[in-house]
Length: 308
Ligand SMILES: Nc1nc2c(ncn2[C@@H]2O[C@H](COP(=O)(O)OP(=O)(O)OP(=O)(O)O)[C@@H](O)[C@H]2O)c(=O)[nH]1
Image (tube, rainbow, N blue to C red; front, side, top):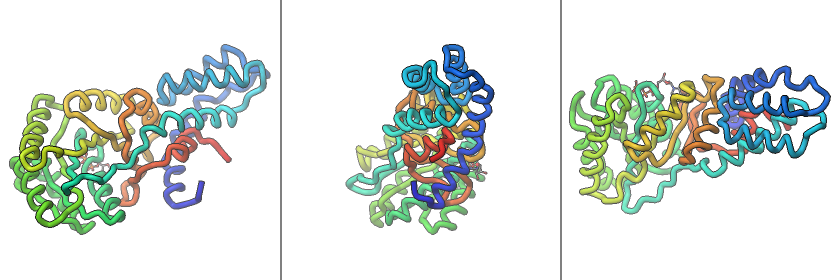
């Protein structure tokens, strides 16, 4: 693994998660030989670290197969956790593909208040710009003036055009305007902030279906992506959100943020294991460069705290 700034961020970001795993494993390696009671305790420690029951039981099986009746230390467990977590993360670690034709590719971004939605949009736009895609934003979260203002500040900072209206305005017409202008000016990616919130499922569905209807008139393939932003610090609650948003909003992929501020980074693994939705990127800080697609092996090793 190369020692890039991003690698350091990944390691730093998941440190609290891997420390917590260490705490949960503390004291389990006092016996000379691995027995069933210790296997049970290790499995419980992994579940308590938010890694999800399937991953925990896979690690248990491997330990039972390979180490039963033998000595075992924490580093060996961490190594096996890293390998099993990498297997779970590999199929979901999928960067957003920008391939829509005709352009622009329309990405709707949804998520509960405070999940990091606005910041994630800015970081994503910045990341796509770095890949030489042209980006335009739509301030479709018209419920709160602050959300519109915040997105405008970000748009200014990263130098991308933004379509915005007044608080309480019609999000669907802003999206319509965005696609029209984006098409006319040859924009590659249109990222749409939405007021897609959980608090009112009927309202969420109404809003999204109206946006879909309007978009469909301009381009039947749009929206190309419906990306749910999740705050990892909310742990199991983030898993419940996936379920509700998947069923109401047709989520096509996830971005998990705030993995740096939490010992609950294992929830990324639990989400991958339970829902198998693509995870386009992870957020490990508040800066513009703190959101990126990830490498399953690198993240698995950071979560497990595996050395070497
Ligand atoms: N540590 C850390 N903080 C983050 C990350 N992503 C976002 N944040 C912070 O989380 C807070 C909420 O982010 P916003 O982008 O405002 O969240 P939002 O979902 O748009 O929230 P509303 O504007 O209230 O709808 C801000 O202080 C961000 O700086 C991350 O990956 N790591």
